[in-house]
Length: 80
Image (cartoon, rainbow, N blue to C red):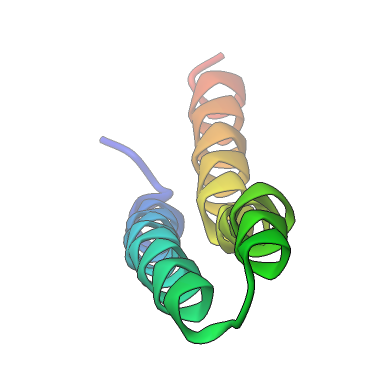
């Protein structure tokens, strides 16, 4: 039985927030690309704005993976 259920729950919530954030960032960047005027501004949004926004949106996923790893280490250490 694990003693780190709360940490694993928060890891799941952070991952879920990250996934929804990535979807929202992708949709927002596409809407932004339609709203700008000019070919080069559209290319700039798609080649710079989209990857940056999706990268920043992945931070909660990385945090969730770190929390899950901490829980795994804690389970392994406490089993010894």
